[in-house]
Image (cartoon, rainbow, N blue to C red; front, side, top):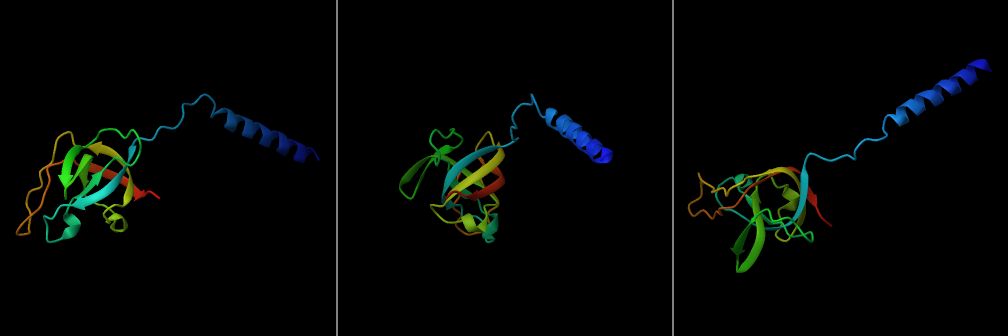
Length: 137
Protein backbone atom coordinates (compact mmCIF):
# COMPACT_ATOMS: atom_id res chain seq x y z
CA UNK A 1 0.00 0.00 0.00
CA UNK A 2 2.87 2.32 0.83
CA UNK A 3 4.45 1.78 -2.62
CA UNK A 4 1.18 2.66 -4.41
CA UNK A 5 0.88 5.83 -2.32
CA UNK A 6 4.50 6.73 -3.08
CA UNK A 7 3.98 6.10 -6.83
CA UNK A 8 0.90 8.34 -6.88
CA UNK A 9 2.68 11.15 -5.02
CA UNK A 10 5.77 10.96 -7.27
CA UNK A 11 3.58 10.90 -10.41
CA UNK A 12 1.66 13.93 -9.17
CA UNK A 13 4.89 15.82 -8.48
CA UNK A 14 6.34 14.97 -11.90
CA UNK A 15 3.16 16.12 -13.68
CA UNK A 16 3.10 19.31 -11.64
CA UNK A 17 6.70 20.14 -12.53
CA UNK A 18 6.16 19.35 -16.22
CA UNK A 19 2.98 21.38 -16.52
CA UNK A 20 4.38 24.36 -14.63
CA UNK A 21 7.29 24.57 -17.06
CA UNK A 22 4.94 25.61 -19.87
CA UNK A 23 3.50 28.65 -18.09
CA UNK A 24 4.37 32.19 -19.10
CA UNK A 25 5.78 31.20 -22.49
CA UNK A 26 4.94 33.30 -25.54
CA UNK A 27 2.65 31.66 -28.12
CA UNK A 28 4.32 29.64 -30.86
CA UNK A 29 5.29 31.80 -33.86
CA UNK A 30 6.32 29.86 -36.98
CA UNK A 31 9.45 30.98 -38.82
CA UNK A 32 7.59 31.27 -42.12
CA UNK A 33 4.68 33.19 -43.65
CA UNK A 34 1.60 31.91 -45.48
CA UNK A 35 -0.22 33.35 -48.46
CA UNK A 36 -3.01 32.09 -50.72
CA UNK A 37 -3.01 32.42 -54.48
CA UNK A 38 -4.61 31.38 -57.74
CA UNK A 39 -2.61 29.57 -60.42
CA UNK A 40 -2.89 31.84 -63.48
CA UNK A 41 -0.32 30.44 -65.92
CA UNK A 42 3.26 29.43 -66.52
CA UNK A 43 6.30 30.45 -68.45
CA UNK A 44 7.36 28.47 -71.49
CA UNK A 45 11.14 28.47 -71.44
CA UNK A 46 12.49 24.93 -71.19
CA UNK A 47 11.98 21.73 -73.14
CA UNK A 48 11.85 20.12 -69.67
CA UNK A 49 8.64 21.80 -68.42
CA UNK A 50 9.41 20.88 -64.81
CA UNK A 51 12.06 23.64 -64.94
CA UNK A 52 9.57 26.37 -65.92
CA UNK A 53 8.19 28.97 -63.52
CA UNK A 54 4.50 28.98 -62.61
CA UNK A 55 2.63 32.25 -62.13
CA UNK A 56 0.34 32.80 -59.14
CA UNK A 57 -1.84 35.77 -58.21
CA UNK A 58 -1.84 36.05 -54.42
CA UNK A 59 -5.27 37.55 -53.81
CA UNK A 60 -7.23 34.58 -52.40
CA UNK A 61 -7.49 35.92 -48.85
CA UNK A 62 -9.04 39.31 -48.03
CA UNK A 63 -6.45 41.94 -47.14
CA UNK A 64 -3.61 39.89 -48.66
CA UNK A 65 -0.25 41.64 -48.34
CA UNK A 66 1.05 43.25 -51.54
CA UNK A 67 3.93 40.91 -52.36
CA UNK A 68 4.00 40.79 -56.14
CA UNK A 69 3.57 42.85 -59.25
CA UNK A 70 0.81 43.73 -61.69
CA UNK A 71 0.63 41.55 -64.81
CA UNK A 72 -1.80 41.40 -67.72
CA UNK A 73 -2.14 37.84 -68.99
CA UNK A 74 -4.63 36.77 -71.68
CA UNK A 75 -6.45 40.10 -71.36
CA UNK A 76 -6.88 39.84 -67.57
CA UNK A 77 -5.00 42.15 -65.20
CA UNK A 78 -3.70 40.57 -61.99
CA UNK A 79 -2.39 42.75 -59.16
CA UNK A 80 -0.26 40.58 -56.87
CA UNK A 81 1.66 38.14 -59.09
CA UNK A 82 4.79 36.17 -58.20
CA UNK A 83 6.49 33.31 -59.99
CA UNK A 84 7.74 30.10 -58.48
CA UNK A 85 9.38 26.79 -59.27
CA UNK A 86 8.56 23.46 -57.70
CA UNK A 87 4.77 23.68 -57.82
CA UNK A 88 3.31 20.27 -57.02
CA UNK A 89 1.98 18.41 -60.06
CA UNK A 90 -1.51 18.20 -58.50
CA UNK A 91 -1.67 22.01 -58.26
CA UNK A 92 -0.69 22.76 -61.87
CA UNK A 93 -4.17 23.69 -63.02
CA UNK A 94 -5.21 27.18 -64.06
CA UNK A 95 -7.63 28.56 -61.47
CA UNK A 96 -6.46 26.22 -58.69
CA UNK A 97 -6.47 27.88 -55.25
CA UNK A 98 -3.13 27.24 -53.56
CA UNK A 99 -1.76 27.86 -50.06
CA UNK A 100 1.98 28.60 -49.93
CA UNK A 101 4.23 28.67 -46.86
CA UNK A 102 7.40 30.65 -47.55
CA UNK A 103 10.32 32.45 -45.95
CA UNK A 104 11.75 34.37 -48.90
CA UNK A 105 10.57 36.50 -51.80
CA UNK A 106 13.20 38.13 -54.01
CA UNK A 107 13.36 41.90 -53.47
CA UNK A 108 13.58 42.57 -57.21
CA UNK A 109 12.15 41.05 -60.36
CA UNK A 110 13.79 37.95 -61.83
CA UNK A 111 14.18 37.69 -65.60
CA UNK A 112 14.27 34.11 -66.84
CA UNK A 113 17.30 33.33 -69.02
CA UNK A 114 18.83 30.27 -70.64
CA UNK A 115 15.66 29.12 -72.35
CA UNK A 116 15.83 25.98 -74.49
CA UNK A 117 12.65 26.43 -76.57
CA UNK A 118 12.55 28.33 -79.85
CA UNK A 119 9.99 30.97 -78.86
CA UNK A 120 10.14 31.39 -75.06
CA UNK A 121 7.41 33.15 -73.12
CA UNK A 122 8.80 34.60 -69.89
CA UNK A 123 7.84 37.27 -67.39
CA UNK A 124 9.94 39.58 -65.26
CA UNK A 125 8.47 39.06 -61.77
CA UNK A 126 9.59 38.55 -58.18
CA UNK A 127 10.13 34.92 -57.15
CA UNK A 128 8.69 33.24 -54.06
CA UNK A 129 10.45 30.19 -52.56
CA UNK A 130 8.10 27.44 -51.34
CA UNK A 131 8.48 25.62 -48.02
CA UNK A 132 5.06 23.88 -48.02
CA UNK A 133 2.18 23.98 -50.47
CA UNK A 134 -1.32 22.65 -50.74
CA UNK A 135 -4.74 23.12 -52.30
CA UNK A 136 -7.21 25.50 -50.68
CA UNK A 137 -10.67 23.95 -50.68
